[in-house]
Image (tube, rainbow, N blue to C red; front, side, top):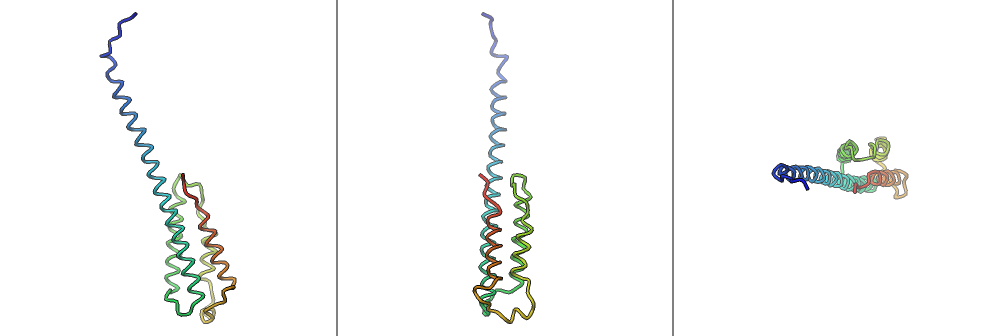
Length: 145
């Protein structure tokens, strides 16, 4: 049986430790990134829900304190957050431009004379569109496991 000098192999445990550290770091960063994206998706869904409630209240009530400019600003935040989420490489969904466009039109596209017709009927097509496109946006992104 040959005589093996273990002093020649003292570097092996150090290589294994360093490799293990890199592997652990990689998986830690991956989990952290997924968690961050899931938080953004939850924020997106929450923001869309808030926007839906405010838009419906705006059109159903004349004494609503929600201004048109606030709705437009919130739509911009929804669009920006959707863009952030869809630009991440681990998200398989594209930017929901069609749904955001349709929601924007349902909320803000009107003739000036229509503002005087507020409150609108609770069965108005505008309210149906707001709720429908809002639900579509909320379902667009799913959480990443």
